[in-house]
Structure formats: C-alpha cells, structure tokens
Amino acid sequence: MENYNLLDKDLMPKHVGIIMDGNGRWAKKRGLARSFGHKEGMKRVIDIVEASVELDIKSLTLYAFSTENWKRPEEEVSGIMNLLVIFINNELSRLVNNNVKLNVMGDISRLPDLSRNSVEKALLKTSKNTGLILNIALNYGGQTEIVRAAKAIAEEYKEGKLDLDKLDEDSFADYLYTKGQFMPDLIIRPSGELRISNFMLYQIAYSEFYFADVLWPDFSKDEYVKAILGFQKRDRRYGGV
Ligand code: IPE
Ligand code: IPE
Ligand code: MG
Figure (cartoon, rainbow, N blue to C red):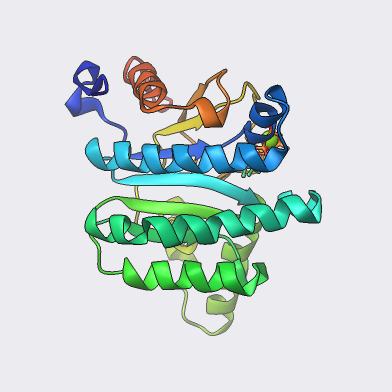
C-alpha cells in the first residue's frame, strides 16, 4: 500500500492540478519513440485518478493537451488523440463505478471525431456521479479560457441579462470550465520544467506549486503522496500575516 498514512487527513488539498509533462523525454532516455512515453504516461493517469479517489480529493485537473500542442508532428498528435479513446474504452466503467464525474476543459470541437465522440460518451455516462470531479484539459489554454469567459460575459451584458455591478472575482469564475469547483490548492509539474505553460491562469492565483524532477511516466502514487506532503507543510497566508 502507499504511504497514505503519512498524510494529514485534515489538510488535504481539495483540488489538485497536474501538468503531465515529460513523456517524450522518458521515451527518449530509453531509445524509444515519443509515443511510448505517452502510452506509459497514460498508466500514471489511471494510478493518480485512483489515488485521488482513495484520498477523497474533490477535483483533479489533468493537463492532457494544450492549445499549443497542435504544433507537434501530426503523427504525435494523432497518437495522443488515439490514446484518449483507448483510455476511455478501458477505464470508463471503472470511472463510473468509482463515482468519478468527468469534465472537459477546452474546445473539443477541434478533436478528431472518434476522440470527441468517446469524450462525449464519457461525459454523459459520468454526468450523474457525485465523487471526484476529473477535469481533463484537452485543447486547453488558460488565456483562451479567460477570453472565452469575457466573451460570454459581454454577450450576457448585451442581452441585458447581466448586472456589471454584480461581476466580481468569484462570479467571473462561474464562466470558467471549473465553475462550481474549489480553486486549485496544489499544482504539480513533473519533468523539471519550471513554468506554467498556459495552465489555469485565472484559477492559480493562490495555488501552491510543487515541481518534481521525475518525468510523468515515473510519477507514481508515492510521488503523489510526496507532493501532497510537501503541500501540507506550506504556510498559506493569502496576503495576510
Ligand atoms: C507530455 O509530455 C505532455 C503532452 C503534451 C501530452 P511531453 O510530450 O511534453 O514530454 P517532453 O516534455 O517532450 O519530455
Ligand atoms: C504542457 O506541456 C502541456 C501539457 C502537459 C499537456 P508542454 O510540454 O506542452 O509545455 P512546454 O512546451 O514545455 O511549455
Ligand atoms: Mg513537455
């Protein structure tokens, strides 16, 4: 079993966001094609979702594909899109049984039909679930998300449905993909990169950051526990004293 007993149950993050990075380097180190790294990375998705359920985390946000990732070779992009289908085919019944509710962040209209259909099926099948909210960021960009919110707000204002005096930091958040959820307490980025890469730009205002040197395919449940332990030692002041 994992070292869950090391964790303080009263100090658990309610929302964890993960930038799943380092698949390509993991494969390269082994002389394999990048696609093998993505495949191995998918296994960690299964582990970390399972751990999040076990740890009673409320929201887990996984950055799977950014608006910038379309720049990659077409073969790599289609490989990732296929893995998404495989993940849903293999895992959907377990997600349903574990009471996981899937939520997509990003514009999935640009995804290949097969991937989009799988995602839509999974959204529908898990829509009544009340446990862990699993946000998958797909064709997601934090800046795009904020612009999209601004446009929706402008539209409502134009139609006379919105009182601008009522718009504040909290009500703005209702126009984001994470509507109704806690703001991320903890953002994890494996692979050694120290940047945010356009992830949840609005939501991370007071998140704690944890950077791990291991690559995502090596990010085990024990690494996850280590990250949460690190988080539990932080002194969150929110600008106070
Ligand atoms: C996975 O890691 C992240 C995705 C965009 C799917 P990378 O594919 O970015 O791996 P590195 O950073 O090249 O090692
Ligand atoms: C961030 O990783 C996006 C995802 C994990 C999906 P990248 O590998 O695309 O980010 P950069 O290029 O290092 O900033
Ligand atoms: Mg990368």
